[in-house]
Image 1 (cartoon, rainbow, N blue to C red):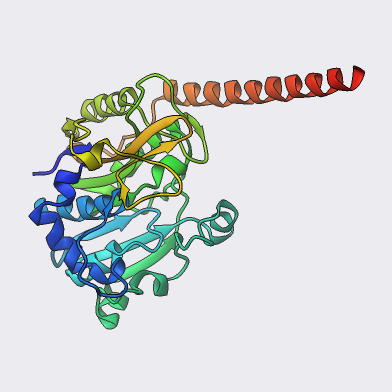
Image 2: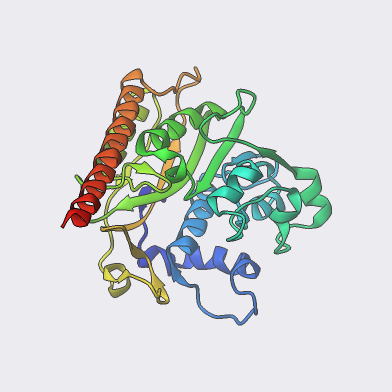
Length: 311
């Protein structure tokens, strides 16, 4: 059974992943060429989420699922086609446009965006899927009682590592006891110390995931962590622009990153999975530190320009 782990070629090319890849072929093989699955971490993320939920008996009629930041990925339609009742959510369209998600086709604003690949019969899709605009930093209280939740590389875009951790804690409230959340994000392969901690895209370190896992377990939830980065030629390749067809690890800034999937099973029924106040204090400190560094950098550039003029 899949556990929380890093993107690896071995899984991507496994029989169980290839089965789902063929089932959603219309979402990625647009010419229906029959080509093998892409060696791409986004493909791995989709297939991992689907298989992890399938293994836990979540993808069948009567199950209720909640997707965050669904964009135009194929999972909403696939899950509905398998009989699940789905609440699909994405950010406000204006905010998405400002962030560039609309231009790149990675945002959904209506139900029509979510079944564009024909993975679900239209009448079944209309019956089983609802769409809502949701800010992942402020999950509405009425989103609860779900059998499963998911997101694909969304919670690293919430402003900071701390906010991403807060999302994982708070989305547990949306699940029934025994429910499961499967969420993918950016993971720093090259350092457990230096990383991108704030901004539009952050990169989680092992220490950030370990801290989060400890807190989840303290709330009665369960997850197993596997940090094996893989050892194949594709696993060892770090892709840089112009990108190649082998895209499992990339450079984000100065950091080698890959995708990581978290699989968390809910054990606590009390719905008190809120962010500790110490984390909020750390988040404020990180943001203040970043602001100070920005002001100092601007000051140095200004001094350098003025010094140049004086010569």
